[in-house]
Length: 94
Image 1 (cartoon, rainbow, N blue to C red):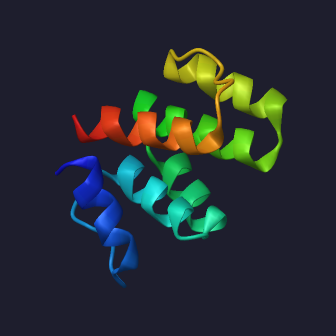
Image 2 (cartoon, one colour):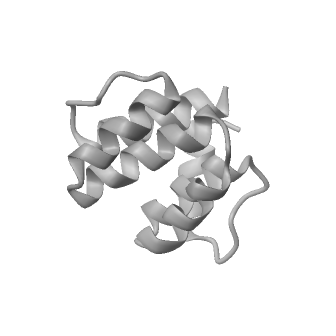
């Protein structure tokens, strides 16, 4: 699935059949931060930690975000949230 195809699913009622970390990003893009956070928290690997970091950065909890970036093995993001969302989605889509 490409990033454009993934974005096209945002208007659907059901999430696409993708990895849970991507489903978390899908929920975030649809405005459901709580569901996105719940899903990211349930993914116990670096992909879940990366999405988790992004979500806490979006929330404004930069200390917590820094912890999750470290767990993800990613640098703390400083670009726009939209750019980071795209970067994570592209990486997870492979």
